Length: 335
Image (cartoon, rainbow, N blue to C red; front, side, top):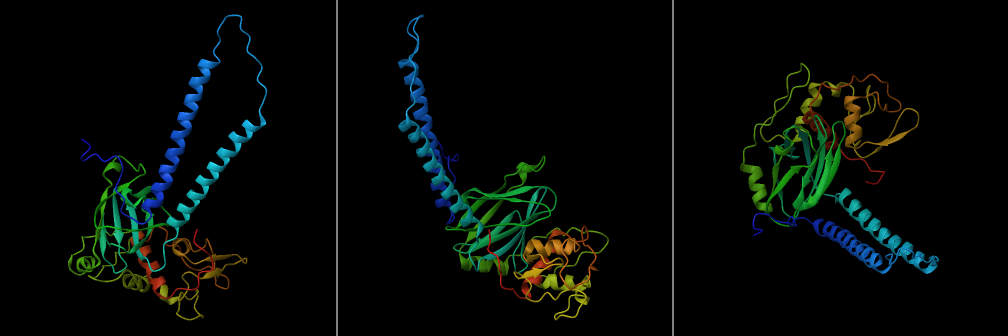
């Protein structure tokens, strides 16, 4: 009867069991108290009903024990929910080291995905089973939400900033990908698939399957940089870096008009005024499109803004190139 209409999504990631346990615990608590309160309302309505027109209700004296019970027990249950929720939040917010990094750009109405080796996909994401996958996501237009029910992951995808989530698939197969945020009239069509493969099959897919023709929007009058077959994101970013003339100010060593970028990713940067900030993806993106927002101490504010002159794919390529120049010691923890 229920074939083709599952009441609960299958479980296909390492985090799914933890999320399910919290979900069923919340459902169990809600059902227990709903039945308890409903039963008490029914019983008390009968027991304490008014029996005659002249009956006067007896005064009820307060009970300290009863008040302690209905205060302490809900408090303990709320703390258990809070602790479990925080545990799930931190587990889903902290991708393990060595995770495969994939960039996601949401756009009305498609998902554009880029692998580190330059492979691009639209509305499909191929990943190997048993490998942690970190998703760094942004949007070209409005708010979207990357949602894969089988993996129990859902993360908002916002224009103008990066959000991250991660998963590790535990079985091979095809799993539905949705946009969980109403993003326009064709929101329901913004769907796709996550295809989990055996590692050997995934390597074969990377090697042999031709990529789709990725739309490469043009921002401004500059012609788009052609992407060569098999070229990694970092390599494309390096060519773009040179085409834009960034290398004339950002020299490999100190002495240029702009700060050197070698080893900058993940390092704490001192700004004008003494404030510090970690050079993560969000900082690098902001420094490219709006360099005046956070000026590095000791360097003049002469960099032109690239707001509206670069596509989200090009920003990803530049950031991936900067990351390839070396990673500094991250001095703050992930959320």
